[in-house]
Length: 204
Image (tube, rainbow, N blue to C red):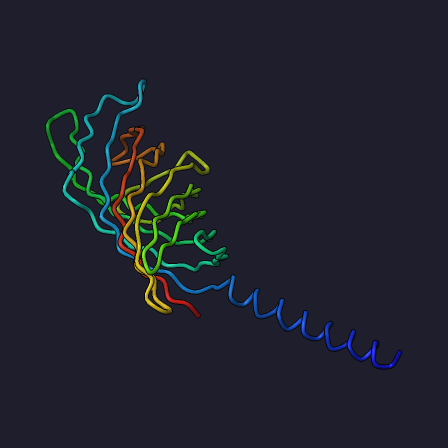
């Protein structure tokens, strides 16, 4: 009986150690950061103040940083993330007398990408929905963001090298509604931003 009890204890210890090892192999976490090339389109809302809104459509820069938690299951993985994302665009406003005003529109967001991927060797493909919460930021314009949050999605490819993960993503149009006050004139518009994102993740 003592031998049977001792064997049970050894099996229990082995099971616990094996479970802990498997969990360590299946899950990981780390830091993520990246650079963005973002484009934006603007459509004045109906009923807004009669004012032409033009956008500089040159590529605009941005960045993100945050963290991730990955659960790997062989060829597939699941990876929720959290990012702080900053985008910057140049808008040109023209008033009724033909005067132009240039100003920076800063779009700060908290993003929650929920990434699903297929991994073959060091290469992988990814897709996932992204929920974004806009954050007001002080600047030369008084910008009021009307919407509390919105959904978009990301599609991309990547390369995993030991503890590093390199990704290249496209993020589909993210819509938002804003009110801008400039020199006492109010203009409301609907906007949409799309991005190319080059990112790197570091396993901790």
